[in-house]
Amino acid sequence: MARREISWETSPLPPSWRRGGVTVACEKAGLDLQDVLGVFAVTDFRSPIFDGVGSAVVANDYSPSFALQLMLQDGNLVKDFTESLGVSVPGTIATVGTIERACDAGYGEENASALIKVLASDAGVDLAK
Image (cartoon, rainbow, N blue to C red; front, side):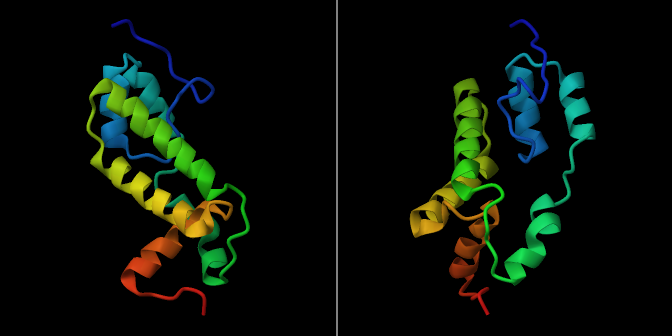
């Protein structure tokens, strides 16, 4: 398989997915891992969801800057891409399942952080105090 170049403009992978499975998928897809590592080096892998919207969640503000339904679309792209390569990414599959549940619960038009509403519900926690 010939090596392919990777860039933010041409990558089918959103930056928020875990490195392990994505690295394996990128290698299997023939992407140059040095380029992949370069992408990892300039991406914030802490927790941008909580860094960026934590206070909004506490305030029960889910005004969309990136709708949950778009996160689902990206998640399905990654899931389909890795499955087409025969690469197992169980964390991604579990996350996409949770995002699907949140969209099914009616949160798809809200900010992606609304995913936490399903997690809170599963735990019996009410975040809207």
